[in-house]
Structures are given as C-alpha cells and as structure tokens.
Image 1 (tube, rainbow, N blue to C red):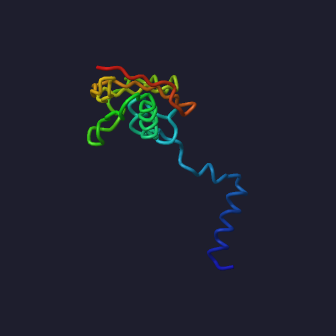
Image 2: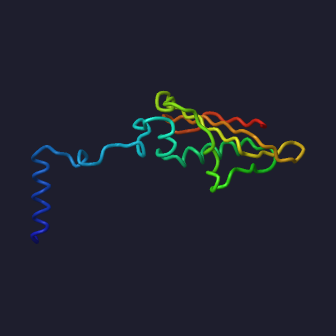
Image 3: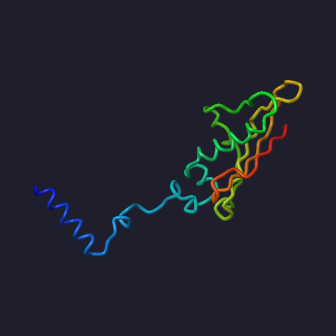
Amino acid sequence: MNGRTVGVLMFAGLVAGAGISLQSLESPATCETDWHKCADNRDLLEHYNRYKLFVACQMEAENLVKYREPKWPGIVGGGAFHDRFLDGDSYIKTGKATLIETRAQFQNQNGAMVHSTARCIYDLNADKVLDVSVVPN
C-alpha cells in the first residue's frame, strides 16, 4: 500500500467512526433537483428540469392532431409552452403546473393553419401530463 491509499483508508475509517455518512456530505436539494424547493411558479419553470415539462406537453398536444403536424414557436421564440404560466406559487402548493402556449398553429378540417392556444396540465408528483386542450384563438 502506498501513502495515498493509507490516507484514504484512514479518512474513510474516521468518517465511519464519527458516524458521518457520505450522503450527508452531498449538497442540499435545490429547485433544480426538487420542485418542492422552488420559490414560485416562475422559479420552477426556469430551473426545475423544465425542458421535460415543455417537451411532454408538446408531445401530448401533438397526439391530439387530426390532420397535419402543428407549428410551434421556434427556439429563438422560446419554444413550445414557454409563452405563459400562472403567477404565484400554486404549482408548488398543488403539485400541478399549467403551461399555456398561445403562439401555436394547428391545421383545421379545411387545411388552413389556425392560430391556437394549447393548455397543458402537468402533474409534478406523478411526473406526467394530466390533460391537454387546444382551442383556436
């Protein structure tokens, strides 16, 4: 054994002997890793695994399509479901996030692309989309 190995083993022994778990040395949870830690709805959408929510809502909305694939705002415009959200901290209190996209376009039965509003309710506890609705503007 070299000196470095002995030092690591001694440190591990001291940690174990002192009753300190390595888990307690990890950094505490933040809004980025635990949505319960977010200050409000905006904080949650800006920091907590946000693309997962946006993509899940977009995919569910696309499952509603009867005709052609919808048009979503581009990345420069923020992407789908980056448009509107509810103020306050209701997402943290209820565990349900409402995402709203007012800049989408869905094709109607006549083949025309119609400006539409898509609304998505995402259950943060169950980690899934509960409901999506799309209505013409």
